[in-house]
Length: 138
Image 1 (cartoon, rainbow, N blue to C red):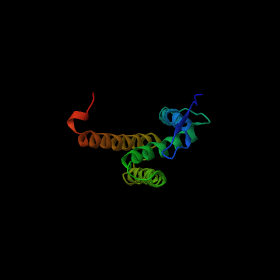
Image 2: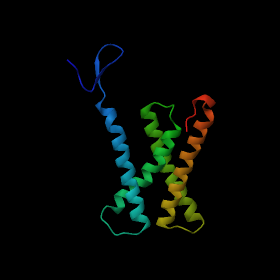
Image 3: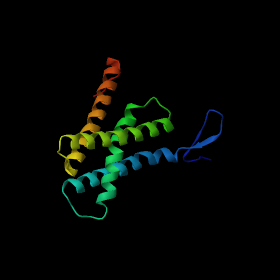
Image 4: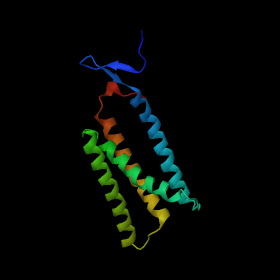
């Protein structure tokens, strides 16, 4: 008899693997929601979901970028630190834009997206430099 979706743990107890299959799907949905929110705000569409989707983008993009940089932390600490970092990134962007008298919704979204992308790229470059030459794959 074969069990589907069950693996044995180190202690011989079966464990579920179905939750791991949902993680890439949930990540894809989160990226889609954030992308739609950013696009709706950038093209200035008056839709009822524009506000919540844009807020999700403004919180999720920096949190995901900071979360990738904090890969060594435990999951709970990683979530708390990346959430706090996302709020800090948003506050710093808003404060900087207000200080130079150039506040705009579009500019804020572009600045948060640029900072999040920069953090992702820096983490990617750091990980690629840290690998031995034999392990790199193209």
